[in-house]
Length: 213
Image 1 (cartoon, helix red, strand yellow):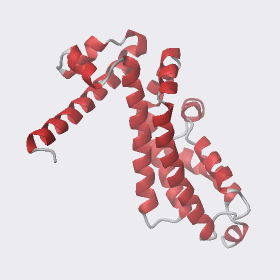
Image 2 (cartoon, one colour):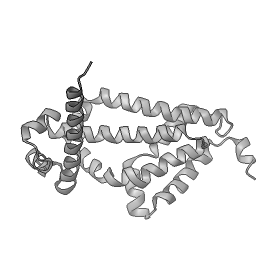
Image 3 (tube, helix red, strand yellow):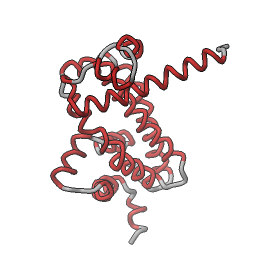
Image 4 (cartoon, helix red, strand yellow):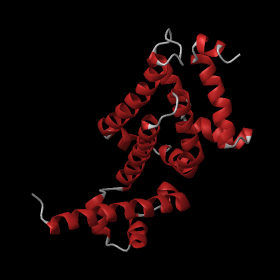
């Protein structure tokens, strides 16, 4: 059993790791991946470079941690929506709105820029097992909502849930979001309304659809 001192040390370690990630995100955003330095990130946090390396072994590892943090954030959003009393469609719309409105707007451009680096892509491939674990959890949560919609008669039973799931994940594409915002000038609310309309019209149960007219 851990002692109070050990628990305190672990909490401080987690808090320091969070501060390092926040500083890394700021430096990457300002200077780009290649111009950012571990020295500057450590300086902004107020720790020695050696202390930073105790948490993250490289710049690539820092970027991976940011990617992982994004996936975990989405998972939390999905779990809150899944636990709500909303209809299955409303739950999926709430997920889209939250992601478009906040999470993706803050970090999308940074992540897109960073992912262009071959070094980072290799690092992500090294960590693919951890990424897959997070993605599997996320997919299972979305699948549960889709199955719930089918059971309630909202969604078309004849469409495979896997097809619905794959199509929904395509709506979360950062590149698609970036293009729609920059070239179409759509707000997050407009994106959900228009993208959601296209998606849901395809998977709505015909009986459910008829009941609206």
